[in-house]
Length: 476
Image (cartoon, rainbow, N blue to C red; front, side, top):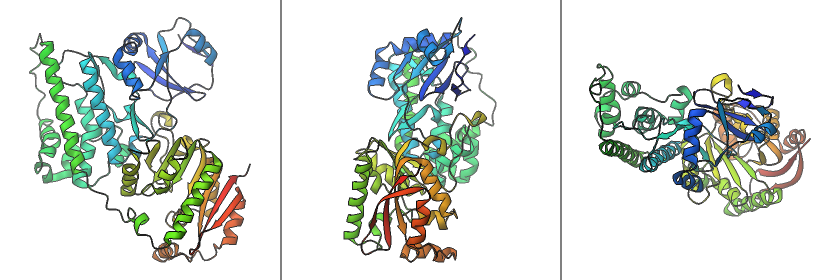
């Protein structure tokens, strides 16, 4: 029986009977049953595990000794469990905050692991999208208890779950424009073939992709289950391995097909950075130089870029810090931000986030997946709120004091905030569309409100514009 002495040990996973995950003091621990622990220890001692850890495809993991656990506050006694510690990724996002390209990258990593594990006599017992998190723009497979020794069955057992979590949501996006993050937000087990079949209607029969993964599986689910396997007393291991490999390779080809069919970004906002007329080239360059100078002065480890759009200032910040979190509400703008950063600025993490309606805590007892506020509060050294506050004021109808209070909560110290006058063409446009009057919000009023939450270090008036930048430090 395990006696937990530490009151700070928080359980954050509940569903796997072989092991549960806990957080304590910024560390990530996993309590694993003896049988599963024996398997995990065997895997961790293998060359394939060493290679995957070195390639940062899975987190570094070690078994904890009795002394390690005692220091934490766990008295194992005559325990039926073994405790492991995983390398913790600083910030995680969830499938319901991913753009389609990120879901696709997570799917590709899952299949890559299956192929490499199978060669070495290992396999995955499940294929949930929740088994993958992103470290910057790089996917990492974190559920090491899902790694088992390869069986003799001539099929990949988690194929159905893989399709529900990855392939079918992506097909829904390709053919119906439904973003996959919406599916994962509403259904923790993804999208079933019958549900997608109903969604596509007759269109499910118009493509090999939809016929193979939607129409036919939905049709077969209405028939009785086959009993063809009941008489099998022996399955040749070599033939089984080949059959499984062919099935996984078929899924890889499906992902390649989906990648080709993903629609190009068409958002009204994705052309904003290249088509804006409210900055002259000179004033825009001055803005970039000023923001860059202030980020350098703040010497941050983590920068939060709110309303990142296509990633212009995300890229700038990624050159100056260890980690950039780029929050963007618009799907296609977020997709471009990801595509603009994924290869050359891998420390940038793009997250789909409507900050007027932020993602809440989810999962059992609201502890398995933290809210966005829980994940970023106290984790960010410098917040960027550039050309953003007027959108919150008008589109989300959030009071200015609430906005500034929230920015102060999210940053540990610094913020770079852009004030836009109500007479600015962009501000005036969205006010006119909604028939809202913000003429009271002049620069004097903004300074007063800002001063309630921040101390202004420096102020910069952008030339030939009605915009002012503020470099601030949070008031204690």
